[in-house]
Length: 308
Image 1 (tube, one colour):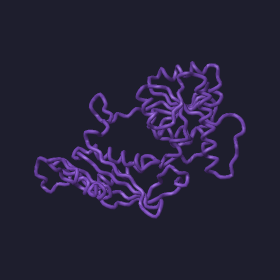
Image 2 (cartoon, rainbow, N blue to C red):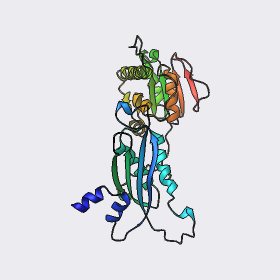
Image 3 (cartoon, rainbow, N blue to C red):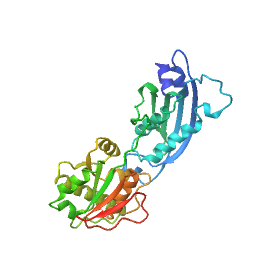
Image 4 (cartoon, rainbow, N blue to C red):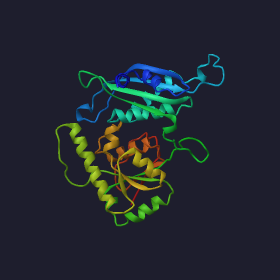
């Protein structure tokens, strides 16, 4: 029991050694790597950064050939720090558990990595360090998507469509959706604020949430007009729906509030919000259907405006 307790608080390198297989593997480690990031499930943790300390140990497959002092033949330490930076910049997360899982998965995607120990600690949430530690093996790592030609992660390019309130209420809405669906692309529908007055808040952050929730109410209005319109909010739901070729309606709160580099436009500029989603998903194009303001100039995806 004493050994178990000692190992529970030991550095991941010692834990890796204690649980090594009969034929121990080589190990590389990253110790006390501290970065600042916005993370956390509590409201007080939004809009501010805190220090995170990473300790990571990676067991690697011995290289069958002489290294010849060639950095390209090994798993570089940079790949570990790059995995951390990539996951922190990809999306704001609430839980250290989520971040540790994603960092471990990214590291295990490296061909040399066989097992990884990831410890992440918050240094600013109390008098001590609060953290989690996980161990993951290559055999249990999620399988990444592979295209038919064997290339990893073939990207889908959806058709993002902004529907004005006029378009949502139009009697010919089902026919418009039929035409969009017939183009053979996953279709993501976006809407703006509903008609009528909204609650007003003096604090901009509170008003932003009110506006985003109002957009989501309007998304449910659209969902009630056609059974194909399924409301989704997370990136995971969007990616799954695109792979299934489904037509969905975007509820923006989660993606907008969790984005590391979120939209600069106010939710009240719903066309600009739809353009941000289209650029984030590398959409085939953005179609603005019905009367609405034109999207901002200089978009990274083609934009078309179509009448009802």
